[in-house]
Structure formats: structure tokens, C-alpha cells
Length: 304
Image 1 (cartoon, rainbow, N blue to C red):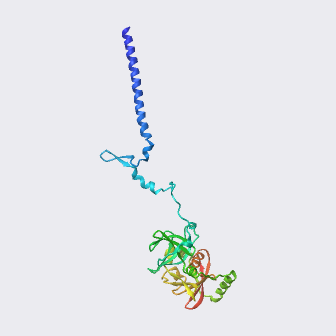
Image 2: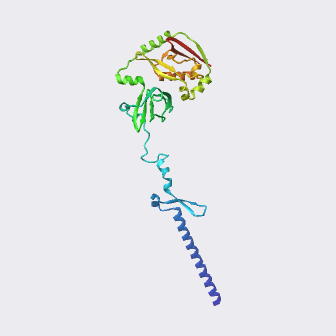
Image 3: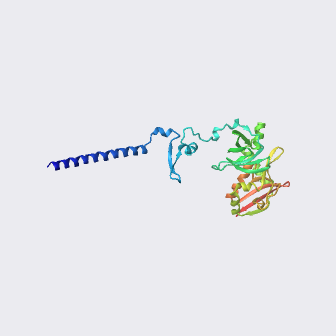
């Protein structure tokens, strides 16, 4: 009887000991898991905290410092920093207070209002080279910051400067500008049609036009365009360096031609000439008024 009693007591004590041992092991394991899953949040502010472990070929752990990812934070791709400032817009720049740039540049025209497809026709007088530029392009030691009608804003060594078209620059200096009433404008346009004799007719393939207009920079490299003045007043656009096998040659244009008007409307700036390209895209016919060796003539383009 006593022998059976001692056996029951031993089994009971062994069961209790095993129960508490297992419970203690679970508590220790749980505590370690919590430390791994939820590190001290104050430690995250420490740039010396190690957050990534990788194994080297020898089997040892190589620990990567959190500072290795600092460049990602600095770039702030999603603009989450409170001090991230939006880019300046035109209204933030006081154009009237900007200094006229001293760079050897000439602005011949701008194309604006095309949803981030604004362009400027600029000549680098040092290199005697004319090209088409957009926002962000570099020219000499400046960057084009903003393109507006008849003017552009340049960033020169961190300072904003303005470049005006030649006619606007002269008007700003002289503080005078001739004003045209709607009646005067219509009269001049009607007189333009009368001065030019009916000339040749040229057929142009529309596909060739569209192909040329896809690359404006290449198109502008095929001819050099500059304002022409007579008695100090704008008198059309003078063409030179017309390349062979270019669309301008196909259009019958020659070196020395002065483009006076498009569809009877007088051309006063490169802006007006650039509208001629737009007309070629959408119209079936376009009439160009030019002066060639002192003679006034018209070229009628049929676009097929």
C-alpha cells in the first residue's frame, strides 16, 4: 500500500515539475520574440543603428548601417518633407526687375502655350549658330528657366536674367511703340495682297511635311532666319543658309528671300513665321508672300 502511495506522489511531482518547466521555456521564448519584432523606438533615431544583416561567403554576418540609405531620404522623391518647396512659377518672378542679360545671345522668337512644349529660337552670336531651345536647355553658361511670349528667363550662375527679342528690346529702350488700330491692320493686310503678284504654285506631300515638323530642331538647322529691317522698321524675315535637299528647297525658297506675309497677313516676328508651320499641318493650301531680289511675288502651296 505504501509502495503504491509513493509511486503516485512521485508521478504527481514529476508532472508538476514538467508543467512549470515547459511554461518557463515558453515565457523566455516569447520575450525574445517580442524584442526582435518591436525594437526600442528611440533607437530608430540613432543613425548608428544596424537594420540589415547579410551573410558573407565565409558565413559571417555583415551588418549594414542605416546611414547607407541616407541618400534616399535626402532625395525626398515623394516630397514628404515639410520644408520641400515647390518650383517657382512665372508669377513668382518679377520680370520687370530682372536685368537684361549680357550674354552674347539673340532671341528671334518663342513658341508658347503648348503644354510644356514651349520653345525659343536663339542665336549664339559667339558661335554664329541658331537653334531651337526648350526649358532646361543650356546655352553658353546659362540655363533656360522660363519661356514666355517674346522673352525668356535665364539662370546665370544662380541669378535670374531676362533676354528680350530685338524689337521689344528697342521698344523698351526708346519707351515708344507704334500702335495699330484694327482698321489700320486690315488696311495693311489688304494692301499686302495687292502688292504681291500671283506667282508660282508648288505641290508638297503632306507626309513629308509631317515628318519634317516632328523634329523642330532639325528643321531649324536647315535654314537661318533673322528679322529684316527697312528704315529702322520690321520688314519681314530674311532667309539664308538654305540647305540643299531640305523642305525649304522643296518649297521653292532661296537664300536672300525675305518672307513678308502668310495668307495675306504681314509677318512681323519669328512668332508669326512659326504659325506658318502650324498652317502647313492643318491646311490644304497656304500662300506665302516673299520679296526676291527686289521683286514682290507669292507662292501658293497645295498640300496633298
